[in-house]
Length: 430
Image (cartoon, rainbow, N blue to C red; front, side, top):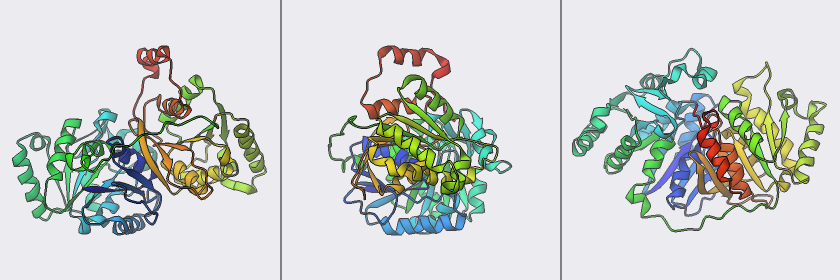
């Protein structure tokens, strides 16, 4: 069995696929379903649909599925664990072709669980979190309601059924598949719950596909049927010949904490580009000056933390445009970059697209959801190491850990001890 992962943003595609690379499978993340992915066992495609209208997102998702699905290759629709984007419309587009949608967005290792068909984030209802309110204020976060709006009839698998007799569970799932339901919402609070779900559903003969975050993907990566396709391969360590660029487009509080620890512990310069400069692009009088400052840092060999600022005119919907313009500032100087760490799927995609990098060969996971890979190819011939991370995701140490990995540096034992003993700098999840 091989696997096709369809995600709506780049960091999500990498976050989901990295578990399979860690299991030894040949795993490629691509920005375009038309790119040559070779004989990879696991292909993760970023459809870049998070901010599209729902109908357009569904069409693009189905197009990617039709381009990359083939006999023996099963489907995993990666969705955000906090239900951002057009996930329900995309599932609705896939369901008539792929069968029953097994909906399991829980990611217990990062504090995301599902109970009574609702998402909980560190014990807090999703619709009361800052993450939800930032983009969905006033909207319900009820999974069944979102599926219903997309035209999908759903059933729910309660915790007791998931944790009961496995033979009975398999029979129950098959019966649901034959009942005419389009989707099954699965309650899950632990990694063991997700492990059971992965093992039982993988053995079903009825048409079905998985819909989940990186949590279920990690249990899928442990399935024997996938492990048999894995080939041992050497993971190349990044070598430090040129500066590391840390590109942060996310404005989440999680990213703020991660940047703070990175600046505190790493030898790194920082530039924060005002949104007003990016909104006007080359028409802004300070545009050229910002490009010069970025180029000077990188040419001097300085590691650089480059961020998008925030002002009163901030609108989450402008994220992709601001990221594209930030990438345009960096592009003339990218040949001097030895390693790229990109926070925010839109930011990572914009930078890779700007320099002609269409796909990444994933190699290892630095921490949960923080993936390291190498470009499969590049239009300009430059193939630095690349780390991707979702913006509102990861421990406070995530960017610093990525910087250490990219610089091939081993953190001192005292620094590790400080992180463990000081609650103020321990990892938190959004």
